[in-house]
Amino acid sequence: MMLHVPGVLTPEQVRDIRAALAAAEWVDGRETVGPQGARVKQNRQLPELSPVGRELGQSILAALAKSPLFFSAALPLRFVPPLFNRYEGGENYGLHIDGAVRSVPVSNIQLRTDLSCTLFLCEPEDYDGGDLEVVDTYGTHEVKLPAGDLILYPSSSLHRVHPVTRGARVCSFFWVQSMVRDDRRREMLFELDQSIQKLRARVGDCEETVSLTGHYHNLLRMWTEV
Ligand code: NI
Image 1 (tube, helix red, strand yellow):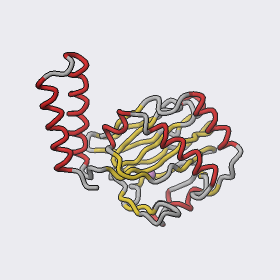
Image 2 (cartoon, rainbow, N blue to C red):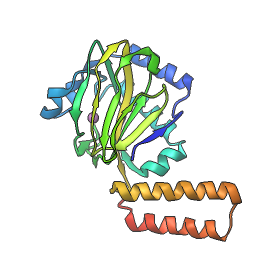
Image 3 (tube, protein in one colour):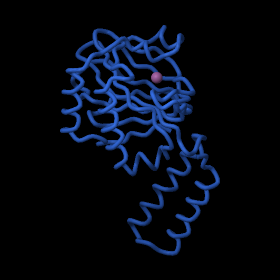
Image 4 (cartoon, protein in one colour):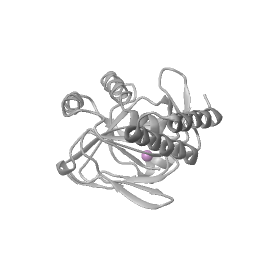
């Protein structure tokens, strides 16, 4: 399941992050991929250990913690700290699947990448090209979102970033290990949770919403790995 999470960052937060990124030192994006990815990847990134990047990454995770929609869809257990990339002058990232396991710098923790996230930090009209194309079981989806919005998709999906032919595309990207490993189970829990919330908004709390919420938690208990 792909999910668009709007308004993760306010316009002011986007502006502050962009200002900090403009003053930061960027490196070749091939530093953070394996040999297969390196053959198809052309962009710039902030170094993984960049103090500016780490601080901005923490502010993004803090903003994300306030999004019930993100939590409901991702059921996050651990995050790879957000990284930052920039594509311009025809740069692109060819078709690939993200590595299954990533090390979190400094901490010695490894996590399984269940979900990939891209948080857009510039407006779609600021650049041409640069669409994120994700291939899933229902076909191919091209995504280009407003600044401050995030797209969440299974890390098992083939995806690419089309060449940026005008302007620059600046994004943050990161991975989530979910409490629920299986995409289909996670999607069912998300749909159940969203339906319960809509029902509760329409009719208030009643015996049925209490029962459905109980089933939600019992399924989560059955499927959670922590
Ligand atoms: Ni990727």
